[in-house]
Figure 1 (spheres, rainbow, N blue to C red):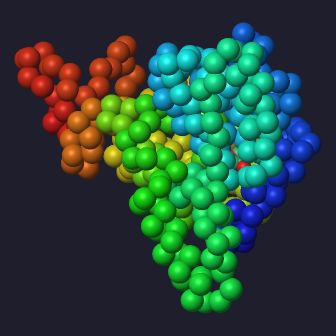
Figure 2 (cartoon, rainbow, N blue to C red):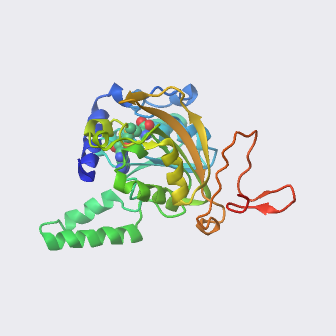
Figure 3 (cartoon, helix red, strand yellow):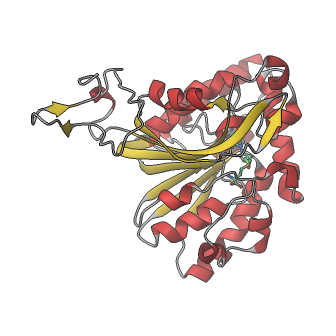
Length: 319
Ligand SMILES: C[S@@+](CC[C@H](N)C(=O)[O-])C[C@H]1O[C@@H](n2cnc3c(N)ncnc32)[C@H](O)[C@@H]1O
């Protein structure tokens, strides 16, 4: 199974799950009941999450939800950030976007303010607005190799001139059970995109499924296990490392389920919620150096923390 087939399998599975609830795709999550009260039943029923990153948001923040599905996390986040904040959901599956978009005005009416919008895109390519690309392709359809290459150039131009999500425009990127679904070759780019769209000092708070050992290739080639949020999982260490490789610092496991959600061929798959930070001063600060403190410890203060001698300790300086 190649990358393209994996993505099609994911799209087909979630298009079907947008029409009829698929119980195999969800983990039990304890969302705040007060927030759920304002969300239509259809959205709650089509919940395919594995954690709750919305618990770590603050009033007034601009939030980007990757793989927003029926919109549940966006509608919860809308309430946490309030009318001064803003929430953008991204999804690539039309049927999921339809569910989220038709419920957005209902939520807005119940809350008394509208601060959520849904955009169509692939989360590993947050610059490309797929609905804008659709419009352009209607004007200039692909009919041969030359028009295929021209379309590729046009997509590149759209990324620059009308990005789906602009660089440094987001306070918090959240996601609930989606990063694992992105094809292996695109995962590095996915983390780089999360880093790009965050403002300096912004953070990612991601709930996802991780494994306790690497997933063997034969499981990765199984489209059902892949689209079921299992075989695309990174290992727990690999997940943290992917943030570090993209330039994040201060990775923190906020929640980790002791009990695995699934065990396949002896490999445990469980939900974790992790936070990772983009430096206040931008990517230049990190110089690809990092320190991992293994603990256990009572308290850790990260980045530029005055040491006992009163000197400043930045990443790489106090190994
Ligand atoms: C497991 S569901 C999670 C939905 C939602 N976050 C929730 O908590 O219910 C995965 C969602 O991510 C979307 N998705 C998967 N891969 C994607 C990608 N590469 N780009 C954009 N959306 C993607 C699917 O269409 C689906 O709506």
